[in-house]
Image 1 (tube, each protein chain N blue to C red):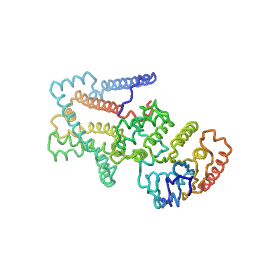
Image 2 (cartoon, each protein chain N blue to C red):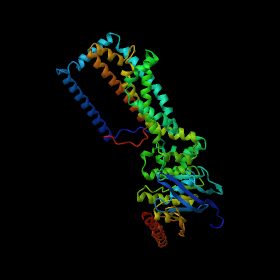
Image 3 (cartoon, rainbow over the protein chains, first blue to last red):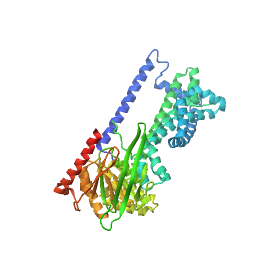
Length: 268
Length: 264
């Protein structure tokens, strides 16, 4: 779809990129300064050890053969939960947009459950499915589903009706309208949903692995809590943040490829 | 209504009424509208906002249904949309994820023509509107005037029998509008497709049309039909001819009265 010819960046665009990059570095530097101050403060030092200590903690976890299995276990849970969330949210969102009864029944459920912390009902899922990966995946599925379903649904409802009319008068049937108009027009919203869904998946990790998980970033953070190993704990927390940022960057990249046709909002 | 000798009625609007049922009761958008448009004729419709001119166009396009009364194309009752009736919208309505050529070939593709043929047709009409160099551009890269040219090419590429245009130049600046008017006139003089053109610009109506239909509001109905007896070919220079100004003044007064009527 995006067969757009690649053109070299203009001088102004290069400048904007450089400036944005610069600001990111400044932001990072300020964060490091704040972190460092916290690490030498009397009351805060215990909770916020600085980089060498954190790296040391992570090395310990690596030596204990925990870090890698925690990482892969969590990623598998998130991938499965998010995957299920996506493949179910997409059709449900379309059904909600097309059939009022479906929307009238499902939308209140989602809005009701969405405000309850996943941690609250996590034990119910564990009691139902037993310990292991299943409850983690289901919990992430529920949370990512709700976020993505609502986002995609609102996207479909916002499609410019003139485009549908224009396609109709040009002879498009319902199938054509779906594949040639509705779907491409929804792509930007689907990508936003993916972004929010991935974020929901990661934030649900702690709740998802709260009971009975054998390994996992969320599970490990809880166990480290009981032994006051703040070095490794902070390392794990930052690791989740890094994973989130990387996934976000990936979505940005896909977004640029798929939706370059959009009228761009000027970013400062 | 008798047209010129040998010409037949292309579009017939018979006793059309359109009501909308809203929260504040029923609004009558159109009432007792009768109109015959001849084969190859260029008809402009003017009137104040709310006179139902867009509603009438939507009914002719098959996008809306009349509450009572019927419309006919070549004696056949209009039900739903059909490729015989091409529409150009004020908001261009280009598909933003498609390039210019993809937009223009959309109609032929819907007819399941082979791709090469679709492209050939599209190129012909892109050339007609002078956008050969922008074939692979996306709508976001085009100006308003260029977008509307693409929309016109897209409508033509489907080879419709009639063109329904809903204030197509309403969102353009004066110079671009004049240029597109001239282009449309030229195309019409060549292809002679029946045109139903809505505008609230009286100048535009008199310049383009063979007949101008003046509508009044509340409920929308036809107030008067004025024959524009200025010979073609016309161009922007036509606007300074005495007969043009006469007709323009006459129509403008009628429309202005309607406007005051609505304001009451």
